[in-house]
Length: 195
Image (spheres, rainbow, N blue to C red):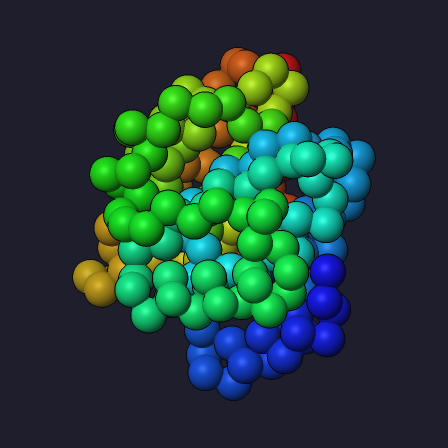
């Protein structure tokens, strides 16, 4: 993996305010992936492909990442980035809206990483659970959403996102088949292990 290119991609994303995974969040996820050595990872929300490229380092030999992105500009950039970093053989990019793509996927994954439209998290969870291997892990980023989720925030603009993130947290905590930790790193990380 070309670390120099990866760093350039990260710096460029930060400079252009493209949302990428925060360093402390990445550290926590890297630890999980190191232990897990996943064969297949599903990522919902690729942006410029930064997190997928970081995760690809922890795949089992011959492992793959499937990632989904709907914004055309980001898709083009992600594909270029995969080649620059030299991981194009490990990462497959589905182009389009995750809401349409997920129901037609029929694969099994060891890890599902959710980092896309906050208002769609409950739907992403349903799909993730359907495709998760036994002992798999679902990791959802930004679940505390600037602190709004745990406060009595109710402004109109973000109301749907906040309500659906609350619903996501409630579901993963109440599901008897999951053991969930909500970590206060980055913008909140929910890690749910399938029992």
